[in-house]
Length: 60
Image (cartoon, rainbow, N blue to C red):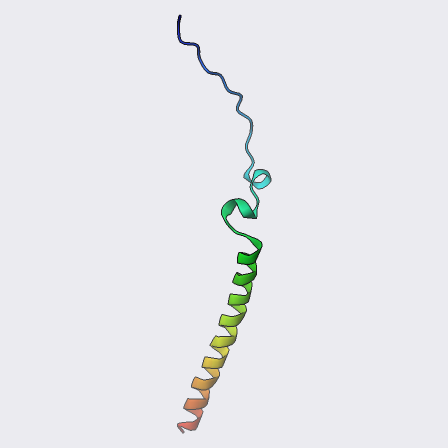
């Protein structure tokens, strides 16, 4: 009536094989929204930069 040890087999773990994008909580829609957000923010920065440059050109 003793305590029997629990034995488990430990296998090698390679995150590159066992994890995919969805395991990290990143779905396809998140990736698409991220790409579109980068494009939109870049476009918005360009528009703001052009307006500021135009303002300083007219200041002369």
